[in-house]
Length: 170
Image (cartoon, rainbow, N blue to C red):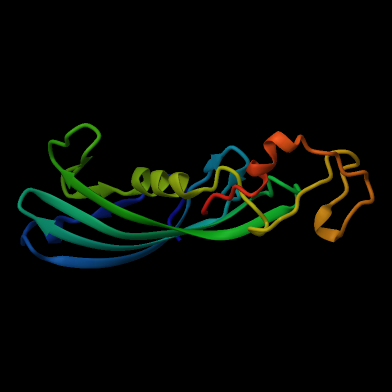
């Protein structure tokens, strides 16, 4: 497992022969990955499967990263944990274009910023324990996944009744 910090990969052998390719399988600890209520646990390994190919003036990195994450269900507040998978596609060149390509540092590439960004973009902003989670009762706070709580149901305004049937695709 790579240590916490930079994920530098040597690509000198690829740069000497355009079109040459190599596969890398890495595990690294990338602490500090958090978005709102979801996070990758501190010390948890992030797995990278990378396909690296030399092109005219640089290197193309394509692959996936997988990381465990934990969070809190937005409806019932139960702990949620799962594994996310994110795609990586990046070009490294000696003179990178801001926001489009990454810096090729001599004969090395640093894949840590790309891996961090991929994981952060896939962390759920509002996780659910399951897609049909009933949540908590707004009056008493009981977990409605366990069954009805017995609180009185509020009458709804009949003018808004058509909105009760409105559903959005997930």
